[in-house]
Amino acid sequence: MTEEPNWQMVARAALVVAVVLLAVWMLWRFLPALAWAAVLAIATWPLREELVRHGTRPTLAATWLTLTVALVLIVPLLILGLQIAREAVLVVRWVKGLRETGIAAPEWIGQLPYLGTFAAEWWQAHLADPEGARELFGRAESLGFVHWTQVGSQLAGRVVVLFFTLLSLFFLYRDGDQVLEQSRMIGARLLGPPAKPIGKDAIEAVRATVNGLVLVGLAEGLVLGIAYVIAGVSHPFLLGFATGVLATVPFGAPLMFVIASVMLMAEAKVTAGILVFLFGWLVVFVADHFVRPVLIGSAARLPFLWVLLGIFGGLETFGLVGLFLGPAVVSVALAIWRDAVKAAGGDESVAT
Image (cartoon, rainbow, N blue to C red; front, side, top):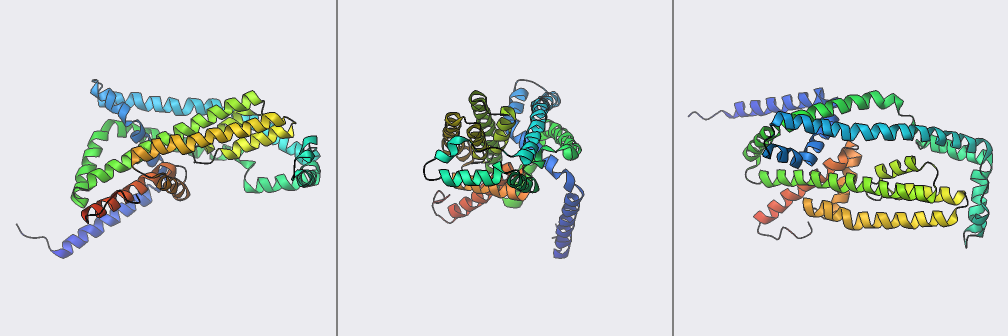
């Protein structure tokens, strides 16, 4: 068999790179939908395997699972969206009222040890005085803390992304076995035997991150939302939903339960505010120091430090979907590192 000339190999490689770059450029706006579909498929793949194992045809299993995911995503979002929209209007009106009239400092704030005088003076200058409140909330609006409720202009784009996510998810469920097998073949051809464990580590990292971030974050939002209702916080559904969303990022929930505590204290419910603050820290401490490291680190073979770096780095680089892609990228990098250390005869567990 005649050996292929070097220039033909170079030309073929250049053609492959050019086509891949052209495809990425052409599909750029749809890449978030494809990424979300991949994340959802990986996270729920055991359910698909269970259905097929019990005799369900792949097409039927894909249809059922896609409809189930659609219902799980859309129905709660619609219910929460209506409730949040209702409460968000009240919040905006409350903020506008504060900017016009200010809010009087509660009597207890001046009695705080050490900081009471300073806190009372700050409250009087920035919240009780209408001019100070107008300036403070004006800066908040410029930073986007109030305008986040106005999402109507982005709704159409989100619906399109959701549609293509569900469409891509159906085909991944239906043809996932062939996609996995072809990926293994290409990986083995390009990288050799290490490709299989590297791909497995990436998949496990995505699945573990979904469980550790989304499920734990929603559980935090639910538990703290119930606490908000019991404590009598204003707009508990809005705060509970925001807590659950921010809780998907490690250490993100404290922002919301601190706001809830301050709101309670501003209404002279000092004991309830302190209890919400302490209970919130307890929930976050248990979730971030015990539950998440077990769910993410052990399943993905990632130390918690690398999990955090992957989460925040992915969020900064890829946006929301980077929460799940980031740990997968870190997992692949560490798998390559471990394989190189093992090939050199070293201890692959050290520092990783």
